[in-house]
Every structure is written in structure tokens, then in C-alpha cells.
Image (spheres, helix red, strand yellow):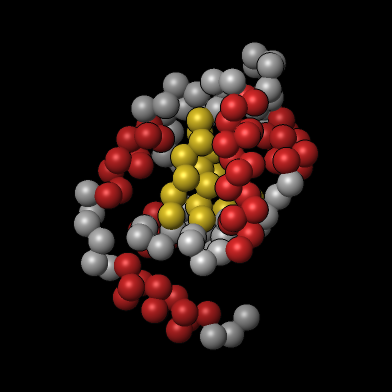
Length: 130
């Protein structure tokens, strides 16, 4: 919707100074997990992201070891934003254990019930070994 390019340029200028070493750590969290990983792409300035944040911790706890949550601040990670085609925030991406390619992705704030339903639709349910 117009004007996005300028914002994007600003975003990349602002973040280009970050050390590349920041990224392999996150990738390692993905590829070395023995359970599916839910990645929450967020940003400090993103209102809806703040609504989703407490939900992530609650759902991870409820899943009781069946799901790992990794939060990635999109601002310092433009190459991850590009790699995972994150067009809006928050974006939630689901990864199979050991994979760094998401098998499901959704954009926008979400309530707990809807999040649990989305996870279940993708084969991840609390208290049910699949």
C-alpha cells in the first residue's frame, strides 16, 4: 500500500550495522531442536506483537515440551526477514525439528484459542503425542 519502500529502506539502513554472528545462534536453535519450533517474528514498535508475546510463553508451557518457541526481533535481522518472507508483524512460522524451512506460516495478532487451533491443524497439540 504505497510508501512501504521508504520504510523498508530506513529499516535496512538502521539494521545493517548488526554483527552477522547474531544470526547463526538463532539458526542453531532451529536446526538443533528435537521438537517443532514456533518462531515469533516481532519488533519493539509493533503493537500487535506485544499482545502476542505473553501468549507465546503460555502456549510453550501448555505444550509441555512438544513445542519450542523462538522469538526473533525482525529489526536486527533483515536477512532472516527476507529469507522467511516476513511481510507483516507479528509473523508466526512453524518449523519441523531440525529444519530451517517453515512448513506453516501466518501473519498478524492471534488469540490463544485460534493459535492452539492453528497449531493443532498443523499436527501440534497439547497433551497428545502425534
